[in-house]
Amino acid sequence: MTETTAIVDRRMLEALICPQTQGLLRYDGEKQELISETAHLAYPIRDGIPIMLVSEARLI
Image (cartoon, rainbow, N blue to C red; front, side, top):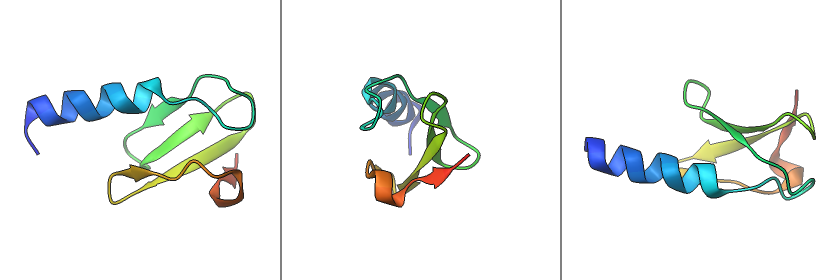
């Protein structure tokens, strides 16, 4: 992955919102998750694809 691709991917991830609260998500690159502080949920990113289903999220 090039630096340009990484920037585009991060911008795309930052544009997503929590499907439960419609709130902002924080990207955790180390765990490959999108974190909803308000909903206390972590949405996984698998093979570069964010899984934005509440049923697939883990409680935090």
